[in-house]
Length: 169
Image 1 (cartoon, rainbow, N blue to C red):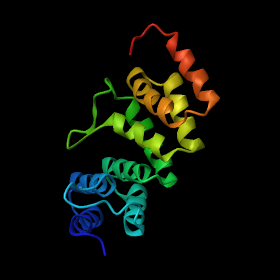
Image 2 (cartoon, helix red, strand yellow; image 1 turned 45 degrees about the horizontal axis):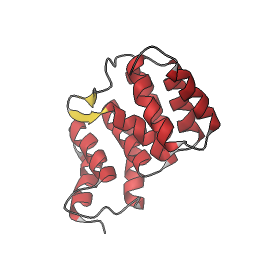
Image 3 (cartoon, helix red, strand yellow; image 1 turned 180 degrees about the vertical axis):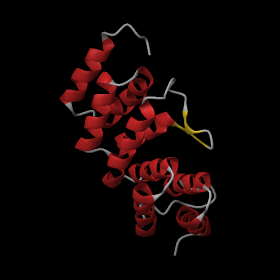
């Protein structure tokens, strides 16, 4: 059985009528609660986040469920999180923006979670975004490239190309 904060968050993720509450539940399940040790990628948590990332009617709740999967190192979160970030990229004006005003998780956290999930799909999305995305998204995508894929020479080429740009960010 899961500790009470995780059991409550699982219930909220699956049944709460408020999309923001479902989204916060996904964040709690992935990041943990200060009062209780994190159970890691517990099968109940992974299953609930996977279902929410695929089926939640709210795009923010879906994105944060996918974020949660990536934080837990689960590659099944990469595709829905990348899709959510692509959809959001057209409206981003600064790297300090939040996923949603109801759920104030910085967008940059979502890009970093892709680095934690790793794998070719995450790498390719981050490379593409760092190379040709809009400015704010590019800035957010660069950090996980340098941290998560240190043994990848293709990443070095992307980062070296970015160094020649005039934009200090």
